[in-house]
Length: 346
Image 1 (cartoon, rainbow, N blue to C red):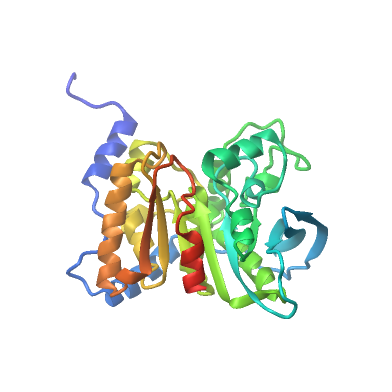
Image 2: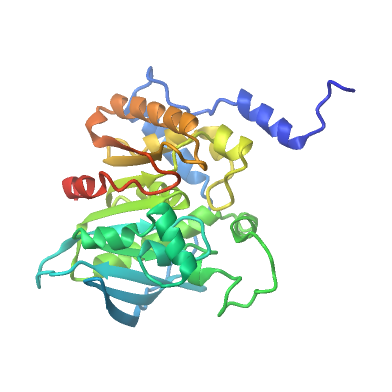
């Protein structure tokens, strides 16, 4: 009996150690053939997508902040639910001229898009910004890009724990609860959020100041998850920055328990690992941020992920389209190459 394992967690770790994804990329493969075979299977794991509806945009507020013009709108993203849409406009815009736009995806945290867009004076929001250099939606607008964001389900103004919603007495991890709800209906939280993100891009590109042919996406942590999936699912996105979301599912997911229902789809790891998923973006421009001292996505497996990703981009004859911002911080936006990267490709 002493040699037997009774731990389910240890069982899953052992399974992950032995696991080889069915569509894992090999340098012996033809990249175009691998991508054409793998991407449809990966997208199928997202399940059904919710029904789209007209956006019905309504402007809620407009204000000035540190030289930027900021607006908050509300739009209908799918049947049964809306989202507030925040947009930042750079200073000194020229009338009649169109500008590149960045979809700035937020990660985990109760405040959703607020810190990313540089909004709010709550001390906790300011602390998030300081700890993670988290206000890239604000800083990139100061650098000349139009930036926009919405809350993913379960965060910010779409967090059921906070008013005006109705479930303040329920203590749940909404990421996992919504994932259970979604899979019961043949959907996933990822698929729902992707659909909402597409609605946000629809509205952004309808604005006269936005150049619909120059749209990029960027995001930290869970925002890196969503940046990756938005770029995989929406061809309007021309360049992507994934911040502190490079690792191996065996390590950060199954061993470290550092993932949730917002990030996964049924059978996804059966098909691919995270470097394969990122590699499906090739040959499109991709900037990866890795924190040398990240305590969330550890440097060892993070670099293992990036090195596998380099192999995929090389096989796609796109090595020059892949960049790395290795910075000294913890789980944070490096901000060393972002402006130059998006100026180059947008």
